[in-house]
Length: 124
Image (cartoon, rainbow, N blue to C red; front, side):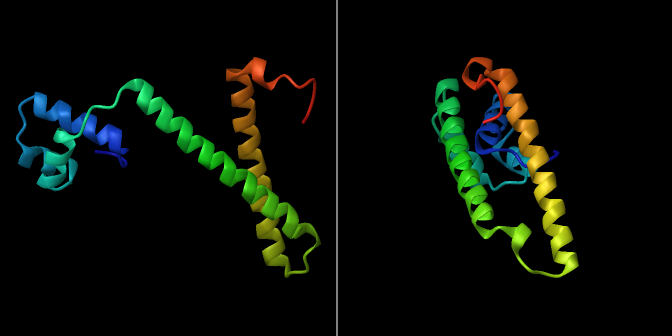
């Protein structure tokens, strides 16, 4: 397996392997989880796509709130006017530019997906 699975992905994989006839022990070995986790995953209710979308929306809402709070904290800290050594200043500048670029990419993707919700007639 490559990469970590989300809970929903793991439960779906456990169910698929069980439907294919794999034993709990074989599933546990393949997914590198305990047999008890396999049993719990098989006993867990199946989440509907609507429930999964609601969970994702709630998670995204939390992440966006945290992002806005972090941005406000960075603005308040005013790193451009904070006296520090050149190495730290270079690191801050690099991190700010890289993060700003990544956020701009996400904002552009958001605008592509939700054009009606993002029409502002220009920059915010």
